[in-house]
Image 1: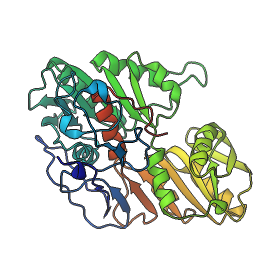
Image 2: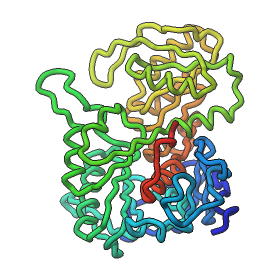
Image 3: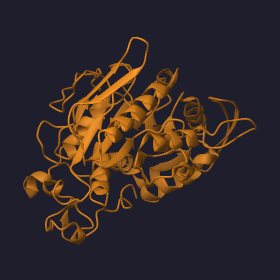
Length: 407
């Protein structure tokens, strides 16, 4: 692959998200999209051109758009800067193999396209009684295997499928197994809020470890303390560069923006986001939660009058918190409200609430497959995190630092 082809930008805007069914044998070939009312920013193209992540700053003065043009095949001489042509022969951990679970195969296809690869062949199916069957259709002996599977709804089914995939890879003599979990389910059950509760995030961490995973790569965990629940290495990547790049492309004036945290617990996330968004001012919504998935907004801390409020969170579940917050912001004089979140869980009445007219735009990523029907949610914009995950996979495979990603 030439250097020009490596640095080519393959980002395009397509409509809607293609629904993929879990088949017996799956290959990464081509991906078409049908028109819909939703906007989807994708990094999947028909060519093998490897796109770049313009939202991430790569180190090294000899790099252009994140690609090191003076690459030395000796990995000891290359700390930063990917070169796909050396992926398999430059690393001592074995050839790179990527497999996708049935949860979000379109995202896995984009990741494989970013790396100039094809997805590995895998057979995943359900028996009549609901049990999951997994069989690898190619040899992975001595390979560095990455399994891409979000544990999004149906959470338990997707989690069990991931555990079985890990076990299958371990028994097939893979050298290293990395579970790539764009959305880590049960991350909100990270502590005992009251007596006699389970810390399910720790339980899931133990399950992944005991199944045979050697490493976990995840995107925007609900709380950073979940990293400490694992007894294996965890690479935690932030999705904010993807959201920031899109917001900066809209050409807002710095004076008309204010970043809003939907609750006190998200202040640190919102503050970091505001700092990267040209040091925008910060506001906080004070709320009182009366039960699970039920929130009551009380007041707004900060100046939001006459400004475009950007509400930042890691996920949108039932959208109760963020919708009530948007209503308060509009009543307090905000010119418009834009919701930004990495994970579109969209449970229950979420789509109805988000499309009710409170939001000027709802910006999410494709870490979870979209659940809205074509044309049902015109305010929705879906950004692809395939470049970010692909770059992270490349760096993990080549024993390079992933610290700069997401900063």
